[in-house]
Image (cartoon, rainbow, N blue to C red):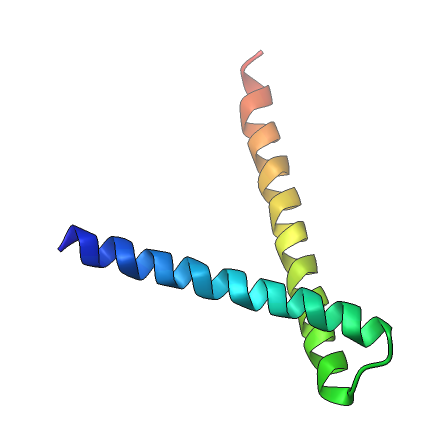
Length: 71
């Protein structure tokens, strides 16, 4: 049973990696004037990366506030 869960997690991670790599390729292609669907995928990829970046910043800020109160 644990091997099945590990295999599934590996497949999910591989899928996420493939989507990220494809999105990055579309961003580069869109910069060089690719077709409309590539520009759309590039826009979605850049928006998703911005959301992830902001989420990380907010998480770090909340961690800094909680650890700095004890002095």
